[in-house]
Image (cartoon, rainbow, N blue to C red; front, side):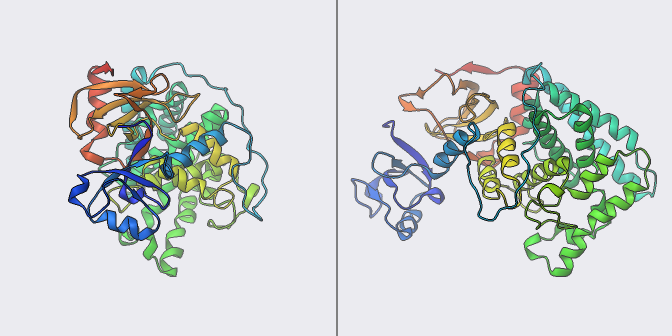
Length: 433
């Protein structure tokens, strides 16, 4: 296949693209054998009747929209240029950041076993809080604080091990999984910004216990899609913040920063959040971090849906909320901290192979280290093949790029099984040729 041709799902086609190859012989379709230029949306509808994916020639038309967007975004976050400015946007002071305050001291392979135990321990701590609430007992605040402190120290050493674990959907309680995952995103962002260890602990503690108020809400409300909420439903749902504060203020030993995170993490930059409709810098710093971290997790793991957005589409969604729901430089710092393709992300390569991101390359976020899982026909490789996209520019004569990220579980790829075999038993890797 020529280097300038890329595989694109039908749903990702747009006008201006030139289709050079189909997922079936041209002769089986009514389209011209020499190619197909997409001039209007009806052309895409015609293709959808016959194909699931096609190949486009970027010399004769537009390139993949998502890849082009992410390339632009990658360049923007590495510079000081203004990436997007919304007319009339709320002004805010630049985020306080002390880049490089923490350095990597372990590799994902070294950290992974401990990360697995730590994540399970964190989920167990949340379950104990749940039990205490149901039995009208004192909350295990001190025990939870100890777990949070251990988790913060582990993520400071190497966040990639925990970020990978965040790709594994919790099969039990959504609240347990959501709060722990959101804490991991928040600690990772806070680490990137260089906030103090004490602040990291308060941030993580606040996120970990932020959902306690939802235990007072009816199950039917929590299981209902928010898009279908009535005005009364929405008012009841948002009351979980005041319920949480009432519960937590009755407990001893919680730092004011922790309570501030719980109270304000649902506030939004433009004043559209709740419960008080705070605007811009009236939202506490740690609550801003908690808010974007929780939102990212909700987009990745929606409560009532089997699949959430892919990581790159989540990033695109957050980017579209710049200076509206979230402060501009907060979004850009989050992208730098988490990466456009976080560890554990399932991706489709330009070779049509499917891979999983193993580790980020800090210098170039779009070219991480990946494991090849499935060949171009979606057949599993007997051994995982390791490719460093920073060092390898092409493969089998094809320009090697990540085309787009995939939702967790695509092609039946189970992050839990992959993680267990790749990290916890042996490194079943060979260097891809």
